[in-house]
Amino acid sequence: MYKIKNFEPRNYQLEILNTTKNNNTLVVLPTGTGKTKIAILTAIERLNKNHSNVLIMTPTKPLSAQIQREFKSSTTIPPEQIILLTGALNPKKRQELWESCIIAVATPQTIQKDLENNRISLSSTSLLVVDECHRSRLNFANTKVANFYQQQSKSPCVLALTASPGGTKQKIDEIKENLSINAVEIRTEEDIEEFIQKKEIVWLEVNLPEELKKINHLIKTVYQDKTKDLKKIGFNKPTSIISKKDLIILQQKLRKDLSKKNPTAFYGLSLTALLIKIDYASELLETQGIKPLAEFLKKLETEETKAAKNILNTKEIQDAILLTNELLKRDVKHPKLYMLKGLIKKEIENNQKAKIIVFANYRTTIDEIVDFLNKEKSIKATKLIGQKSGLTQQEQINVIKRFEDDIYNTLVCSSIGEEGIDIKGATLAIMYDQGQSSEIRKIQRAGRVARLEAGKIISLLTKDTREIAYYWSSQRKEKTMKKVLSKMQESQTTLI
Image (tube, rainbow, N blue to C red; front, side, top):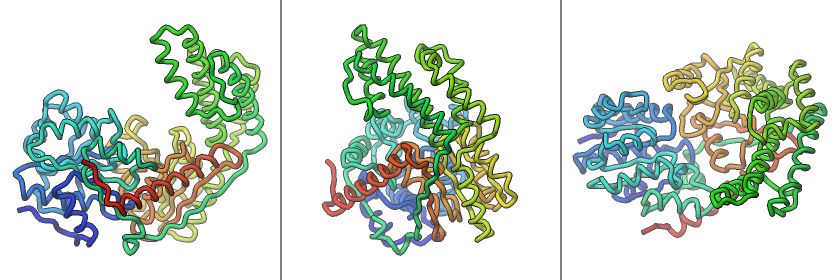
């Protein structure tokens, strides 16, 4: 008989366990309130009931390693039988480990490949845990593995965990359907407020300098001029309200028309590609600054596409390139960088043991932030980025440990730092940029602070730019999500 150790389950965790041990359950809990402990409790129940194993899927390798450690420290399951399956392992080795393990933690992509190649079977798996299950969209690896599981397991039980299932009932229903969920357990911050640390939420605005505004005006002039050409392909929405989403939807439609040999589809695809690139250039300037824009424009000059050539052939873009290069030589920074440094410096002055997390969307910006902050004596900054951007799984784990051990006091993260990772002691989170208006990303980012003590969350916004709209849109979506969850909680919504 396996048992838990080193923690005392909270009442709400035991209440939820009564549902999860026998049902395919979606569990929605605020960040930092012990979703992994519910997975541990459920796993122990299922393992003691069935001679079986348990599979836990997480979106990132650092999170997989963290959950493996938590299972080892919180259960009497032999540590050597709590394994991490990664794509870095030889497929044959993964197969051997799977056949002898009790708990396997992995990314869904690794498991999907092994299932499709018949290297493993889920017939003896009595529990499938899908962590950060808001990623369970149609055709995502989570969903494909869940389908294999329902077909293969002799005793299937799914536990889906998230703090942010999505802003609409439709999104939540999609997760439920894709993972064969038949029960829902929701606890709001109000339900378990005694276990929630207080978070102060602040947003601060900076003004875009006139020199940057001048470049942005040149870019936007080309954008406005080119949007008029959309009428040639029958797209008649007023040019002043055309969004990036409109262009992407139009692009998808044109790709379908291309297969039907529609003669205007080729022109339309090139035009939409051009508009998306120009809009992206403007977004980089508004939200990131000169260096990321300069890199994008340089990359554009190496492209052989018709869209890239048409952009570069305009006088306004050529003028924008000249001005950008001039400001780059003068090392002109986005004003958010100076505000960021000031905020972090002040936080450290007030608390020598302060730990700050900065979230940014772009690798170029992350590098620029780290270099800029490290010029300040009191700031010891490092970056946490994904494998594709340059850090191995072990390097990612080491970075988090060095941050927790006070070797660094500032951690600048890409999206890899947003989901699930328990970074102990972080007191301040700063959102350097807003990205798209995603309520899920907003909740996930905010969840990295105030896990052990009260904390503060600051969003940096560029005045009179799309960032303001992104910020308030994510706020509205989060409120809508909470209303949807409250209604589901009241009605104890179930599917099937």
